[in-house]
Length: 550
Ligand code: ADP
Image (cartoon, rainbow, N blue to C red):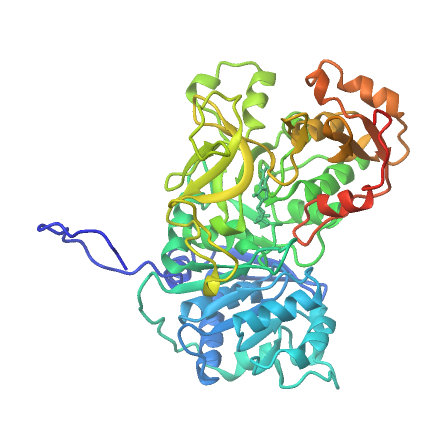
């Protein structure tokens, strides 16, 4: 694989391939009693530990091997965060096959497309997703069997799904006498398709090596800071970019894992956090909105929850402030994408920031932060020339590193790289200390009179208003300026605010020419398969909207 010249004097250390199976072997041997707790789709709480998880992963690996699954074959999952999904992570990748995690929130037609594109051989799924499996099964000729992740008692009488198998029966029928095979660490380990808001989804194919390196880097103190003393709830789904790598970094460090299953509402999460003494979690801002609302409405506090990673879309400063000051929960703002395994940056303070006031510290912490070692980044203008790191100049953000995509699966979906760098499609600034801040997605940025208006800043101001629950800003056609900002707002239950009051609230907080030209109040914002606001839907919905200034 290496295209680089060899030294006449090569190092004399062992050549042990970095394989995903080594993570669960390590956790079994050194943290065997560390718990894995799951709220199951069946409704109850399931509890076991890394040793038991390893044992069952080997049984599943034997089952797959008996089916004739070979190294490189793709095996799909349609599942929530839970212990059986974790077993699939290790059984599939550990035996050299490729774990293809499917986002169940995608449209069934898109799911069919990616199952066929990946040529999945088997598909494992949670009970919840039986209707999806029923709908897609007749259109997925490569799938030889559908494995329902439950015990015999939950299997349907007459499902209509061809070759429907029972997960627990496979576990019971196989022994744990299995030796994880050794193979090249650059072999594919897992596959995740981008959400594909435009065109077909594209496959990001991770390797064992990229996954292990990402796990090391993400666990570091200024990354996600994962340790054996943590009890972690990955709220981010295992069906999308491997739950930000937590199913790997937790066994690597010996942390306790707590899986929330399908219930991600504020009440369910809060109860689980308290019951399992959760110290650390990770999720997108919309999930935290639900949790914070629940905790606030019921006047609760957290007993053990101390740190959370927020990413996937920008964490509003108001949310960070509430977590930090009202609930004493540290927020690590992180940024990444499917093509980056996903972590690229995380934000934590430098020594020189420690003497700053709280508001000054928060101003730093709301940035998306520093790269993790391994990732390199730069911002460039439309002419491709690198732009200065002054915290003000914004440009297209490019990255490279050993866990960043080189090309899409089957080389379909266009060129991934520009001159050896991956163009993220994000627009950002980088300051003199190397802290990156996303101003927008390049396709969401508002182009007004030849200048750019970043929508994230405007949304952050809007959600810091006490009556605003969620906000999204989009560009609307303007005869003079090309585009001007329209602010869409979801009010908090029972709260009132007028358009004029809201616009007044912006004054002094953003440049005058950034002020939204209009505000529209709506009941809910459309969310995509990964919990992000679908701005293309909003643009479609409001394309006839007439701005008062037009
Ligand atoms: P994921 O949702 O897992 O992060 P996706 O590939 O679906 O991965 O989306 C990646 C995009 O999400 C990024 O290119 C960026 O636009 C946006 N994003 C992710 N994290 C942040 C963040 N902290 N702030 C702003 N935007 C973010």
